[in-house]
Image (cartoon, rainbow, N blue to C red; front, side):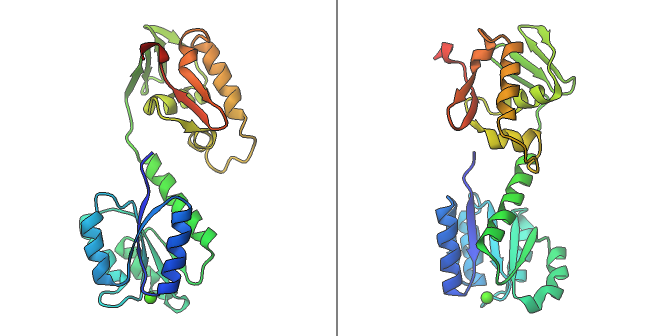
Length: 232
Ligand code: CA
């Protein structure tokens, strides 16, 4: 999981400080710029790390739209614009500029978190697509939708295949139940999260509970990880 690093551009100190505190509390790294010029300076300094820009429209020196235009020339980094209510008609201009989303002030902090999460999910979906995955004798041919264990083809349902695919994409990285639910059932799924456990169990059995199945490890209270302990 890559760390989320937000460039917050806001000239209103009390609002900026509130947003910064809340984001930090949620685990985001935040750097705060208080005008358009600082925004550009910080952007250049941290562009490798910045994963999202939260940009006020009305700013000293350069306004938010100017900042967004400049950044769009060099980067597709997601930008959420914050506007005052009387600027909503200008938002069309903003969306043409390549903004990803906008929030009308005043907004609830939960609303901001929700918008950020939507963008993060979209980015995750755009992550690299693989044709072929393999891990210690398990091979997945994505195009053929085929799984083989030491060259022997194993029949999996689409959901089992999906779970194995998510685990194989990032072996040795823990996937939470929620992440697996979002990836395979879609985040609008509001049933029980233990549906993942049920599929994990059938998946383990199909790939051999005593052999490959053991590589799908339970991380208690968190989720699952694909890990081969035998070679460590
Ligand atoms: Ca402002």
